[in-house]
Length: 126
Image (cartoon, rainbow, N blue to C red):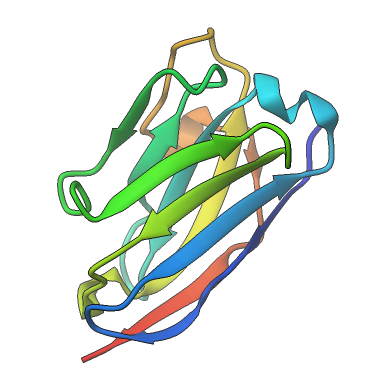
């Protein structure tokens, strides 16, 4: 079991930046692949970005490519989502999720992740 806590959400104007952080309760978090997902009101939860437990493989949704960057901070035992050039359509609750996958494997489907945080609200005003 691993407990995840997201932080860093908030209100920002379009074009601004936010940094989301996903912290875990276990030191072994470094051996978990991590994904970021988001869910806007009335919409299904969707993939944003993911990183393998090795940190050597990442992927992101087309809608955020070139704007969002996912990375691991092994010293702090966290996964960070750097979000730049934010748009109103990025408004959603953002969740981090973790799973034990092979070293370079990432997943982009929510149901493949067994562990989830409570989410953090990101609101982008126009």
